[in-house]
Image (cartoon, rainbow, N blue to C red; front, side, top):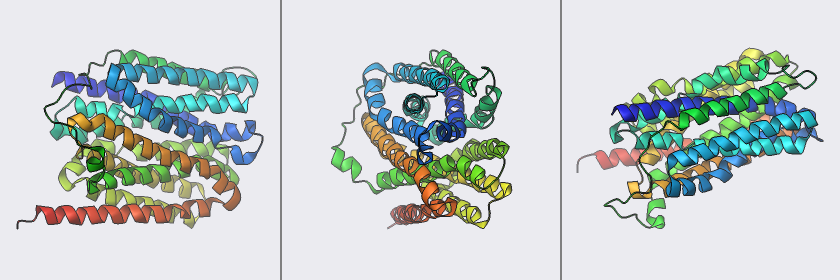
Length: 393
């Protein structure tokens, strides 16, 4: 039990360092992209490529971990992040948009590997504590809410005449810290033989709970990342000072990860579908606030609510997913989930800059409504189905 808690804590701290790097890039990527890009509509391309990198890395990460173990995969991932940070710093020195985009692709690949931290935490603890293990690892992002954006500001002028180069060098230092932590993680091999035989993929994918878990997590993540990507541009576009970007992003990330301290307990008490439903209602609430005005408080409150809604949808979806596969099927199902979730997130991020530049902030937020309605209805349907199943004959 002690070893399990130790591994969960190491993974949570590693998650905090990884997310601090990602959040810093989220806060700076679009702004620096608008400076380096030949066309303003490409401003969000660095962030989009970061999400694409996450999606692309998901499948190879799973294969590598199956053959060489979780820890080896995690160390490869953090090495990619280190390389991405250094490449971004070099790109800013050279004023190269292409290299800046490539650096963010590597940073996204780092996240693609690191997204398996939450599954590793489940494997390191008792099945009854799965939701709490996921929550505690995801809660590592609370540190990122403050460290990530502040890191960007602290490193802004470290290199004279080269704005934000120091920020990406500091980001590289975070990867070195995560590398040191991950060398201490001790996990059981993933590719072990189990008494149960894996079912055919068609049978696994036919489960309604699997559909809802992947769909819910994917839509929740896609909506969150699309709005978050465009937010710095919207704040500046509304005539608000650039200093407003950091607190808005910070409190958005607080909303994303602070609820994780109790989300696991809520899931254990009320069930994953119910918590996902609350998440989608909160995400719809974000849209309402975003449409009410363009002041600093509108952005702050809307983005905070966006974060909380994502937390419930994503952790609820991940927990529900863990209930749909056998141990012998875990890597296959996890890889499919990660690819779908971050594939849809990549598409939404790619569309964020274009939607904002062509149609504006209001239309961008309205595009989320039909997706959230579909996700909410699917979880309601699953919830009713599970209730009927539990009723005595």
